[in-house]
Image (tube, rainbow, N blue to C red; front, top):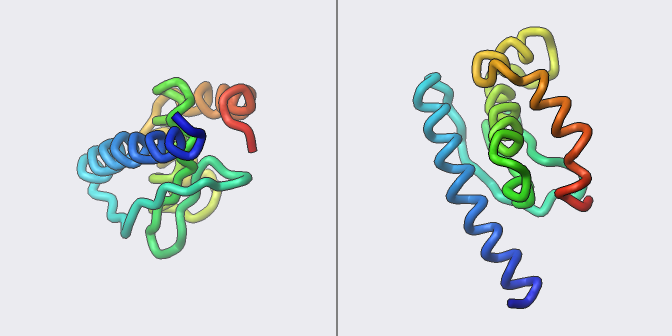
Length: 116
């Protein structure tokens, strides 16, 4: 399989997995999002626009499941708070009670899985 074909497969898998997580969490918490975009971001794992678009680097599916889910939860919390305020982190905590550990793990280990 060529690198391009492999990336296409990863992107397809990323869209499926991430969409399922977003729909489940947004449904459970009554959050509203506009759309999900799977990108090849050069410096980010994900982002959330002021229009409610959730953008994710397709490579996050290379992370362990709990780390990938943390990234998705982090961006979902930005639907409520478009910053990294105390209130934002409270929203993340609601979605992921172990967010501090998961945030630290991602920060310290992401480079082992994703090359920016």
